[in-house]
Image (cartoon, rainbow, N blue to C red):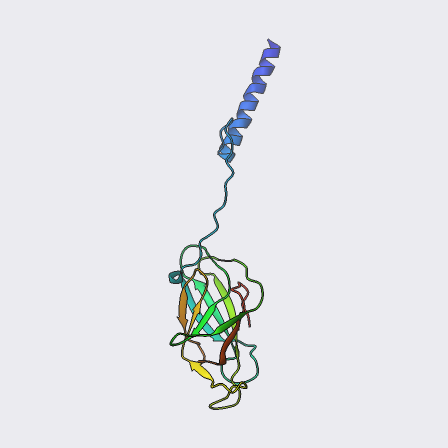
Length: 181
């Protein structure tokens, strides 16, 4: 009799441990746990991004814009991702040749989170009307159209001036969660 009580107690203890494990993990004894694959967040749609821009603190010597920081704020209630280099066009859809710099990585942007790119232009020289070292005529735009892969295009004005550049060229960093200066 003593032996069967010990077995009964061991069986009850094992059942209790399995019940606690099932309650904690949500897995019933004897069932297999399916591997769960985490689905990455979707790309940020254009409608979920608020875009602003200002002249960068560190710019090439000259007049005009030189360099600008473009900020993308996720104004939705859902996390999304941004990746890659921007496309850039002046008002009136004048595309600029973009030279990428740095390595692009997927950036996760939580609700109200921010991501940035830095654009560096061929700088206008001189005062007043200015000139381009290349001999081309400088261009100034009240707005630029900045696009990101899978996240649409955004028309944006500088908070502190017009976009001024030479030669329809821009160097661009990839989108990042580190604010450039």
